[in-house]
Image (cartoon, rainbow over all chains, first blue to last red; front, top):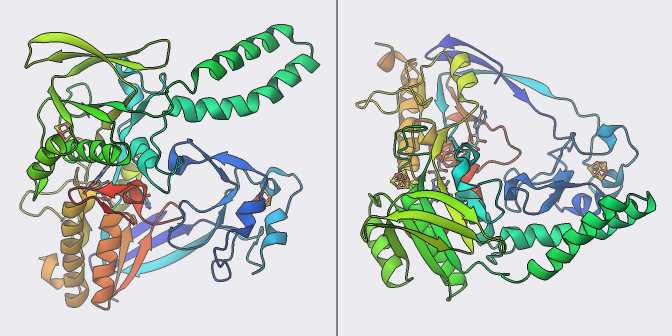
Length: 398
Length: 56
Ligand SMILES: Cc1cc2nc3c(=O)[nH]c(=O)nc-3n(C[C@H](O)[C@H](O)[C@H](O)COP(=O)(O)OP(=O)(O)OC[C@H]3O[C@@H](n4cnc5c(N)ncnc54)[C@H](O)[C@@H]3O)c2cc1C
Ligand code: SF4
Ligand code: SF4
């Protein structure tokens, strides 16, 4: 959205529609274009754990079911020759000339449902995220567990996934260094290759997992608040990991396990009884890495009253629910207030009403919520918006 | 003149649910999403607690 004005019952908005360079009315989403596209790009939907093409869909079931060209990587937009996708497309949907457009809307009410962003765990350097390949975020874990994900649901250690990719590109790099007579570089690359060949496949599957809770939440350096859903998603991920591989052992390092919701406490108990999860009460101080790329967790065990360490195959961080980065711009355009954490400001008695009449909010834009709560709020926000439409805003304007 | 349409910014599970509800009431909805597909974070999840159902 680029412009916004007006008041309840008659707001005016100008929306920027980005070009897809594919005609949505013609594309049948057959995927012939992407199959032949020569340009590989790290797939952000899977956090770079695999590649996608320059013409792509986020995920197979994605809606709308239309491919999109990424002009930052497509050869045609980089001034090179290509046009392969246009030749492949039987429907004639590819249109390199498509332009961005603007749509003018007149609406009675607005619902802000911009959601959240995952807390950036590199802000806690002592956990090693970004430095150690086998320390991953909660969402990366979801992609690794997913049958539609980069490993088809096999819980491969990221060091193996990345190591294999590196092993594939190393011969080319070594040949090039040798051709250019860069002997130092070539021997360093050869050494790396030898190490990877010996080590990468030693621990192909992650079987001993550590989940670190409250990463960026309930932490006075970052977010003071509790992110609401992360205790539950860590338990869930540990249960699913065990379903995939019965030898999996999981340790959940927590301050309190907050399982508030219908059926949630029972889920936690089932996790321990049926899936053998071990709940360890204590905050993790630091994560280090041994020479086999295994994360080593140092933590205070408050039940045993001692400081302990544990070597694991993989560590999964329960990243906090942070306000979405784009919300500040959206709030300025709409003229709505944000709270001290940059979630949309609401009153406890009117949890869906923003500071501007006729503009409502729901889901994680308003604060950390799980799916059942987000959906409940969404239906309420829809009802509030419908009230405005049906009364022309009179009911709420007073 | 008063409009009878609604604008929803964000096509995650919350935005989609609100759009479906309004659609069912016969109200025209404009759903604005910055990514090529709707679904938000939920599309990236494997299964969901507390039932372990598949997401999308
Ligand atoms: C690892 C993990 C696992 C989880 N597992 C579960 C679970 O099992 N069960 C459960 O109940 N909950 C779970 N959750 C919580 C769940 O993700 C949220 O409750 C839910 O996704 C919130 O939906 P939302 O629509 O509010 O936000 P989002 O999913 O964040 O959607 C927001 C949408 O708005 C779009 N957007 C943002 N800004 C703009 C803008 N300026 N213009 C246009 N569009 C914009 C975004 O692209 C996105 O599509 C989990 C969370 C995590 C991190
Ligand atoms: S024109 Fe661009 S998107 Fe199409 S095949 Fe070539 S690189 Fe891929
Ligand atoms: S839900 Fe659990 S992990 Fe998440 S912030 Fe709250 S207590 Fe910490």
